[in-house]
Image (cartoon, rainbow, N blue to C red; front, side, top):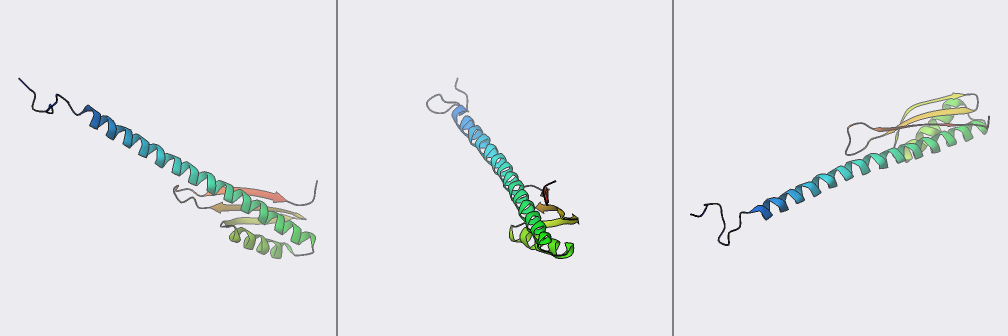
Length: 120
C-alpha cells in the first residue's frame, strides 16, 4: 500500500523542505549582517563627526573664538558629517563633544565622545 504523500517516484518531499530551510537560514543571516553593518557604519560616522567637530572647536578657540562660537562651529561640522550634537563644553582650550548618529536598522543611535585641545 502506498502512502498518499509519496510522489510518483517514491519521493517524500524532503528536498523541498531542506531547500526552504536553507533559504530561510540564508535570509536570517543576511538580515543579521545588514543590521550589524548598519550599526558599525553609524558608530564610525559618530566617531568621525565627534573627532572632526572637537578639532574644529579647539582650533577655533586657539584662534581666539569664544567657547560659544567654537561650539557653534563644532555643531556645523558635526551636522555636515551626518550626526547630531548631544553636548559641547569647553574648559580653557579643551573642548569635549558628544554626538549621536541614527542607525537605520537599529532602534538606538550610535554615540561618540571626543576631546581636543592643547597637549597636556
